[in-house]
Image (cartoon, rainbow, N blue to C red; front, side, top):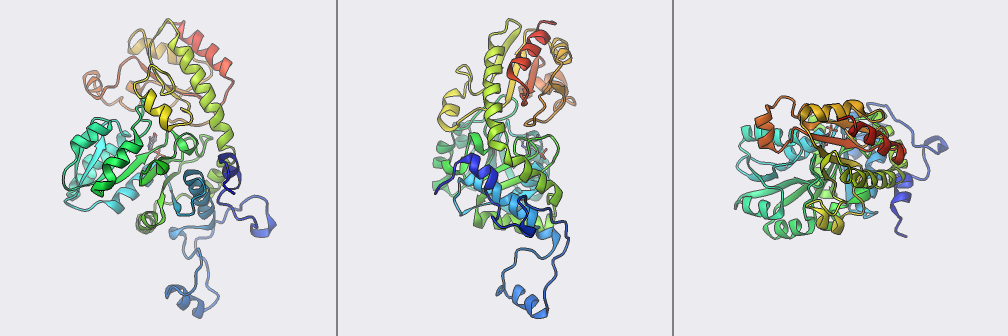
Length: 394
Ligand SMILES: Cc1ncc(COP(=O)(O)O)c(C=O)c1O
């Protein structure tokens, strides 16, 4: 019987019978896994004897369970869908790209993808003869950037900070007949709100540091897709060594138990706060894909079941007025990141783009009066009252 997402979040990927009859999955810290005797070792390396573990850099039993849970959530129970857990979201992206690129090939990346992903493509992969085109974040923009030797499209949905959404079915229709692989960073959506594989996308990456871990207390990443692709990427992880520790894998399993409950609250609170902000006299504009005013509202409503807790808005005023609002907030912390129980608030101009001049930020589309809020799990009315008093301070 196909299970719903709440059930998959609690039980998905976990063996019913766990070591020591424990109800909770144990943390296995071992760096090596002994063989019974030389005969078992021979049979293992000849492929006649299957065992899950050998040496810590190739995986561990706690990682296996976390991967099973992520695959269950992203694949909705499809046994062909496989996950690879990594040490951070960036290591999921880097390990995946290193497994997929070759000198002389061309890839397309949308211009509002995560900044460090773009930097990796532009400054690192280019050194090894991997060509790329950075394009406008739409299917038409991607199509215009394709070349005969394009083999990979990298994009995000929704994006940060303006929550642009890509029509994933249209993207898959563009890429598949041309034998181009598609890679979506769906960190902001999570499998609660969007399942890119079901729209024909080949690979999904996540910063599990965000909603999947969900408690602002672990760094991890994941790449999820069909078994063949993921096992090829896993081979590269064995060389690059960017594994999540067994302890972090355990924290992720634990965090995922409440994933569906948390996401329902992030979605409800996110939408209520976005609506409140849109009606506030001191707010200039709000970007939230669940608002009819958002340019991607139609696409988001078609392919997503909720819109998450990340909201961007500009205030009527400049950079220092925006700082006043941020500093006047009593509940959200001034911090980067997103997806945890504590609401966080920041100005992208003074966080991810501090190193850029106002002119460079303008070219990159980062407005001086922009504020980004990650709506946490506090009471929605308390958050609205807090934002109201903070916005009234300008
Ligand atoms: C959309 C997106 N992708 C990837 C990353 C990188 O994840 P991590 O910080 O876990 O390496 C982030 C982190 O902010 C992100 O927001």
